[in-house]
Image (cartoon, rainbow, N blue to C red):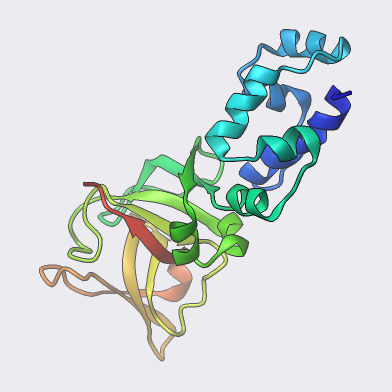
Length: 218
């Protein structure tokens, strides 16, 4: 007989991965299922499984119902379950022409990515390190346009080989190509040639992470 005790660990594991592997409580599961916390507690006490809500939960995340309810894993189901992943999308954070700081405690939403995008961002193992923010201004055109969504890998902060990074400075948050100089300063370079190169001390900025992909605004 299917019971709350069988379902809860799976739900908590899925939700935990969506929020950076943090500890998940019953109230978090109730919120994810769209159930009032008191109602959820009553259903748990009575061992009344909220099938409809769990079905909706699985559908939005492309999770196999067979696996969720019956522990049934066949290759096709396993592959389908692994085709999608969520990353944290900070829709209120903008970078490029300056836009304040990057605060990991800010509210975010989940952005669902398909298998093709997951591979472009480095594969399933890297997804936990990926955050998404918005582009502000035209300083990185034509590579990145205003209102594009860019994906940042927080684990990739080595600037010795260059690349495009999100950096936090005293003037705000920027997306720039970085060139490390011999005097331990860095050049912040815009792809738009109408903007000049800014040289700043390396220790005056925080490297948030490397830009590993983007999604156009149109």
